[in-house]
Length: 223
Ligand code: DX5
Ligand code: ZN
View 1 (cartoon, rainbow, N blue to C red):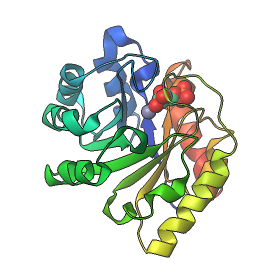
View 2 (view 1 turned 90 degrees about the horizontal axis):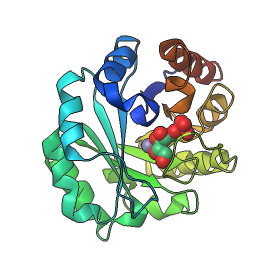
View 3 (view 1 turned 45 degrees about the vertical axis):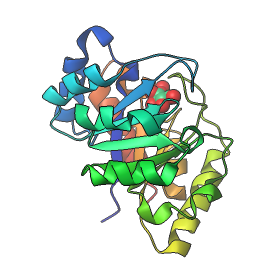
């Protein structure tokens, strides 16, 4: 049997007047995570939601909340999101002064810890911390907005990350986020990604559940 690729639909592209329904729809349809994009208008040029909304989503979620923090100074506020119910919490390497400490805080609270890298950050910066991570999120667009085009260099970045993990003897979940659809999913899966975030290619489609499962099938078809 081929390996499984996990799907983390991003509710950034869902109807914000009915987020509860969006969560129910995708989890009933087989989503592995609910991907929640937190943006602060500083680290990225967009502003979305914060801890109160994460807390509200937690009430309807039956699959883990995968919270992607695109915020400055996560060092000071990471606990807000842990208290709000984040099951997996991902911070940006570029936005933390003390990345190692933040990771320890997340894991210390019993959550799973992820680190995300912008397209301009070499994956090799994670070598000394990779053994402490549950997930690495490789951004395949510059973070801030849904609906952007996939940056093709990401495929090589994922391959290099997979190699780095093998060198270090560790197996964090490799997640890719941005511009993922049925044509880009197989490229990153073949390179080593095992969790895919998709926003517009799921929620901007007529049938979000079929769209999500088509992306998963496309990815798994190359494994
Ligand atoms: C972008 C966010 C993504 C976004 C992806 O900064 O981190 O999770 O929702 O959207 P698509 O899949 O439309 O590129
Ligand atoms: Zn995201």
